[in-house]
Image 1 (spheres, one colour):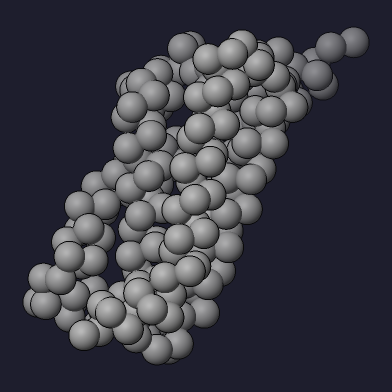
Image 2 (cartoon, rainbow, N blue to C red):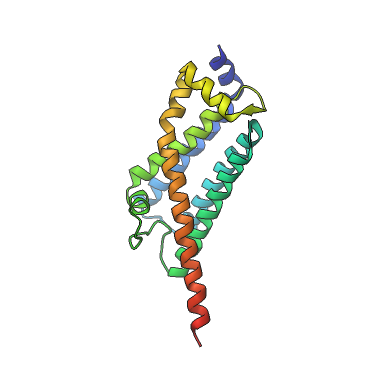
Length: 196
């Protein structure tokens, strides 16, 4: 009965988020298929991805306690992607996904395999949406909801459980990406100061 109530009250939100994800995927596929890839398109895609993730994380920060968990994830997501884009331009690369020269195997695997990256991104968003659907009021304790959803074994909680691995990989990649990109920015500044 709870699932029916959740769907009726939150179904429109989830439907619009789902349509947004599908359109994002179709847009990228069409751009590659019809050779319409551009720097502006890549930047716009990343910005819209960050905005949609930010909306979900801000909503979750208001629904769950402690809300700082979700706001910290938001800060990590924005900072890592901003630094990655900026360091890409400093290096003169065409794409922020060009990490062939990275020494980190997970970072290369993430950006080097579209299916793996897609799985991690979709798993991350699915986890956030399922957490939204699992909340029953606006001041839930995150750990209490996770514990009760595990004991219930509802389809939504199973979906959340299946998404955790991809979500965790994406967060780890965000940390690697932020560190790697920050190092590039620092090296750029050092080299700039050493030039006469």
